[in-house]
Image (cartoon, rainbow, N blue to C red; front, side, top):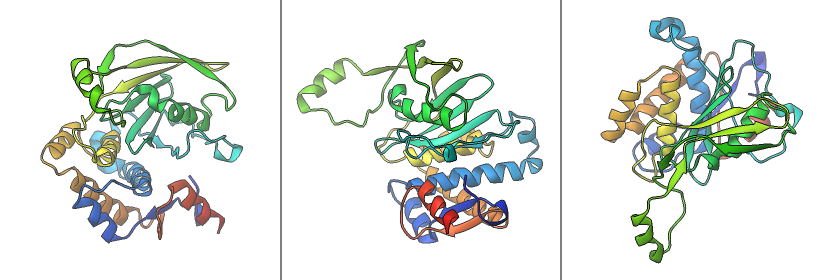
Length: 276
């Protein structure tokens, strides 16, 4: 992440009216909000770990990795130098108006994608490979291939509209997608890519809130049971926005909080602030 003065991370946020509008509606969530939420959740979890005894006994907290443009050529400036004690990476990824969460287990060479719509795992392959390259876990110029290694899962949605004549056939034979793959690179060791399971998305607009609550669950701030309950009663957006307010209050002294005047990718906003 880019940093500001005194090596503080720069977090871009919208005003309170925006946050309230996404809480009280079915409005699709903005990538800048979600990226900033993930970064502040990470900072909050790391800085309060001593106040949460259960957290200190669990798996070491991960580091957030941002991948806005997975197909772009990666420059030296975009490569991340990970501290030696980091064993996991987490990122909220976006494709075709849908969010999912990617978790990388570094020692186990294992990548899990949590997608509430159960879209094909390979739909996220560019995000996975770009993340591995940016984190220096595989070579930037390496190519790869993959082989199926797991069972299949019925897909809830693919983001594509079916023609009327195709609907009856689709009902007779549900679409399925492989659950696991083995990624083989030119030089680096193999990596396992698998589908994870969290909350099954039953609508067309809650992928952002589901991704944010997965981030909260990964950092030990909520339980999976609490998220399932919140989603079932239509309260998942409030859970996220209440944590957002808590993060802003707690992180304001440690991070540089800047209000974004327009909605653009979080990495672009950070780069512009850093260059100013």
